[in-house]
Every structure is written in structure tokens, then in C-alpha cells.
Length: 477
Image (cartoon, rainbow, N blue to C red):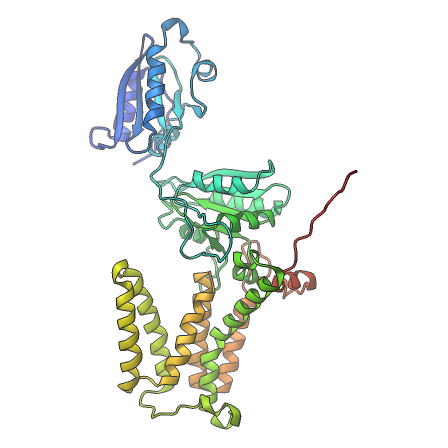
């Protein structure tokens, strides 16, 4: 559809012809137009079936039926301000903007003789209940989560930050989809320079539609260095996490039709933080955080290091002789590890696409068949299955899918280089992994490893150790 810049006419008949052609009300059964009378003037209103609160619409129509010619002012603004019995009413005169509002679910009323229409936001979107997200579960804390409706998501944040400094700016992205994007930040804590940069990027986005919601938006905001797998954004479906990041000076982007919000800018330490770190006492929170860092390091280094030692058995100390392969090796260990890396992802995809009622029995069958008979058949050794099982389970300690797969790609690279070049390849893989982190930049252009590089002792301790919250208590007699 080609957008035509056109203003409304005072003639209702001309406006009806235009929107009948643009909205194709004769073909689209869900776009409804109803003709009515407001006082002694003919009127028509447009809306999308399924987006309206019927009880509110009935009350509005009851009001319009009761309006007399003497009560109807000549100025549309006066009617909207003094006589319209609804809170969210906006006067629009640009036809393209009106079209977008109608397709977004806003009811637009046109009255003959007025050059502006009355856009009444009495919509309600179909949505699921506000429940705890499956991925971002916590042992302690609130059990609500974001949903696919952007207004509900902003309300969940407002509920936690009752401060006038909290700003939520609505943007519109996509020439066809017209997707709503909300820019959320604390005015007195955000980096103003970075905020202006993000606003400029949002305004300059030239795309047809955000087909994949926040992922499409992320690629539009940061299109460079696609080959670096480490994530540039942090995603969360928890309102408490989003509110905490906003209070910490971060920017949160909410995209309509998506239950996940984007947090930026973030370093690798920000991405590895979880809500459980703060819902427990400092000692427990620190233990959980340190454990997560150690396990992330093990998932990266365990299998490549084991392969390196098996290639050089003379390096294995006598007390660690148990890591050697006890049985016969029919398939090279490198091939076993590489096959299992892909097989684990295959099992993940199968579990995602398996109906819920069959997930448990099929998982048991897959574990028995793949685990037991794969070893007995000679394809895999028991030690290989053990270490890869640990890596597969340990990957779930990371809430970020993107970070988990970044570590997986680096691990596969380490395996390949170690298998081909031995110790030199192992060292080269470590260097490449470190450089991928070091040369990576946040969306704001800062170091991805801050506060480690450049080193900031106070901030580094804050990232590693969970400290008590400071309270400023003023006692007045």
C-alpha cells in the first residue's frame, strides 16, 4: 500500500471514500465502519474487531446519541476538551496517521463538518496472564513477567518505579508494520549522550517491518560485527530486573508483541548477572555469582583441555590418571566430542518441538537409548559422554541464550584447533576467545570487559561480590 500524504476534509463523504479505499472495508471483515448521527450531523467511526472494550464503546455511543444540536460546538477541539466523556482522546488530521491508529486498534470517529477526527483509545489487546517467565525463574522474588502487550509491560515497570524522572518515550519503527517501541530510562541517571545516540538510531531505522520483534530491532540498532558471537544486548522477561537496570542508569527498550525487553549498554558482567543474586543475603548471592562464573569457564575449557591431555598423556599427573580412556577407542575423540556438540543441539530442538505431554517419556527414551546403547555400540566412550553431559547441563546456568551459544562456538573452535595443532592450537584458541571479548564493544562503544579492562577495582568487586544495600537513615527527634 502506498502511503499518500493527505489531510482530512470537512466533508464526511470524501473522508469515507478515502478510508474505504485505503482500509478496504468491503474486503476486510474485521475492519468495521459504522454510520451514526451526532446531533444533526452524520458521523462514522472505524475500528478493528477484537481490539475494543465493548462496554466503553456502548457508553460512548449512548453519549453521542444524547447530544443535541445546541450542545454541539463548531470547534472540534472544544468538543474534545469540554464535551467528550472519555480520557484518552486525540484529535488527528493526517490521513496516514489516522490509518495507522485505526489499524493499531484505536477507534476513530469522523463527524461531518469537522476537519479532524476523534481518536479514542479504548482498545484492549488479546493477552495471556502476567505469570513468571519459564526462562527467568527465581528461587525467591516476584512471580510476574512481561507479556506481549506493551502497555501492560510499561505498567509493570511504573508499578516498581514511582518517580516522575522515569521517562517512557513511544517510537514507531517499520514502514509497513509500524511497530511500537518504548524507550524507557531515568532522566537523572542515564547517560544523556548515549540516550541521544539511541534516539537518533531509532529515528534513522529504515526497515519494512520488525518481523522478529526485538531481534530485528537489535540488528537495526547494531548492524556491525555480526561475526562476533558475544551478545551486545541483555534480554529479560522479568519486570524487577528491568526496573533495577533502569535505576542503575541503563536504557530499556520495549517492543510491542514481545515479552522480552532489551537492556543496553551491557558488558559481559552485566549479562551474567541474575535476579537470584540479589534476592538472597550477600554471602549466598556472592556464592551463586562466583559459581556461575566458574561454571561458565568450565563449559568453555573442560572438553578442549581434556582432549589436549589425552593427546599428551605424559602431562597427566599420576593422581589424575582416571581421566584417561579406559576402553577401546573406535571413533577419534575429537570426532566424538564434535558429534556430541551437534547431537545435544539436536536433542534441544527435538524437545522444543515435542508436544508437552510427550516431552518427559521421550526424554527418558532418548537418554536411555542415546546414552546406554551409544556407548555399547562403540560410537562413544563413557568418559566422552560424561564430560559432554556436564557441559550440556552447565550451559543452563546462563540465563542468556546468546552468551551460552557464544561460549559453545568458542569451545568448538578450541576443539578444532587443539585437535589439529595440539598445544599451539589450544593456546591460539584461548587468544582468539580473549580477543573476541577484548575487541568487542558495547552499543555505547565502551569496553565489553569493563570493569576488568580497563580495570576499576571498586566496580570489579561490585560485579563479583554481592554487597549489602546501603541505607541513609535520618533520625529526627
